[in-house]
Amino acid sequence: MTQTAWLGFSIDRNSGTPVFEQICAAIRDGAITGGLEAGRKLPATRVFATEIGVSRSTVVTAYEQLVAEGYLEAVRGSGYRICAMGEVELSRKVDPVRPEADLAPRGFPLPFEAGHPDMQLFPHRQWAKAVARVCRVAPQSMLVGGSHLGNPDLRKAIAGHVAEWRGIDASPNQVIVTAGSTDGLEVCLRTLMGAGGTVALENPGYMPLRRFVEAQGMQAAYMGIDGSGAEVPGDDCGARLAILTPSHQYPLGGAMSPNRRMEFIRWAERGDAWLIEDDYDSEFRYAGRPIPALAGFDHLNRTIYVGSFSKIFSNTLRLGYLVLPESLVTPVADTIRRFGAKASFMPQQALAEFIDKGEFYRHLRRMRRVYAERRKVLLARLAGWRDFGSCVDHLAGMQLVFHLREGIADREVEALAERKGVIARALSRYAVAGRGYNGLMLGFCAYGEDEMDKALDVLEDCLHQVAAG
Image (tube, rainbow, N blue to C red; front, side, top):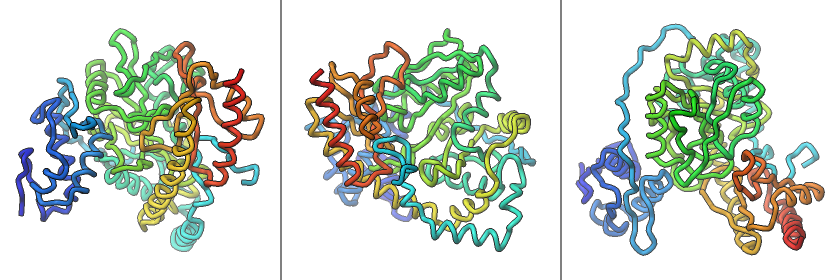
């Protein structure tokens, strides 16, 4: 049975796709194709829900997901409107030819170090069962991975994961296991760039990446960040590669708008350039589903997807992965042969088992629930610090940025807090000189409510001292 709504699309009650996702897909397609023009007001949630015969909460969930993705804007007192999408048109997906061959204690992080999962939540018993099962059935796989590109079963499990969670259609042959996202980024840079080449980097952005680019003799062209995400480089900057964090910009937060994503894809196609999507913590969205990956928009044409298990599973296993366009599988494989594979074979088969048995997703759901509560605690406390600054809630990620008001230097606060055992990294450290960023990076995932409360007392005292001069 189908039911046609005011917006001109149909709800299929017999489909396995949830109704809210059908609504999202229809509005998303209409915004991209121009069928729903920019500025058009959507029906009120209650009216729309009644019209298509679903609960109002279903429509609210769909609208809020599209707001997060940048297709809709919520206007106070006026409901929801379609965002401007520009006139950029994507090329159609071309089915590639698949190659046949594989191408606490002091050791715990201090509040508020960012990017650390809470290892006290690690599913030790379930992980031990997965390891024990592998040791019984295929012990040789713990030492011999079968390929320098990674364990075949893990590559297959990763292909399934990115298809379900990130909307990326790729075969296991396009997946390469790495020793974390940093290793994956280095492999890509070695493959695609040489000394003297220009790489476009977000500013502010990931500092270790900037240092690696400089150490390899490459040039950096910096992309500023605005309300739509990273700004597209000019054609005259000479960059043939851009590294982006479109689902959750690091360190500011926020998602890249659909229009800006399309502009980057067209930039890459026009200049025969490449895009690297660093999707370091995209699974941690606290409203709706994860935002679709840029690589899904691009159908893995000019985009390389970099993922990691360090944030969502364990930062001690040091495992990540690349999902590559078909044309880059052989060149990247050659780079790994030349420099050597860094990813340990030992945990790969067990991780494949862990994913296939559903334990990975049970663990991920638990982490999202716990982290969401900790995020609320931190946001509630920061809301009372209006004299010092403000915080923008992007409903995602493993850290928040508290933007300081003028006159409170973030590096002074950082230094004073660190002397008292609290880590609050200065936002200005993540930007090249002269960009005017001033704030504190506050991670919240690895710390319980009591631990955060004590650390926030210390940090508040530091802010008072610096503000008083």
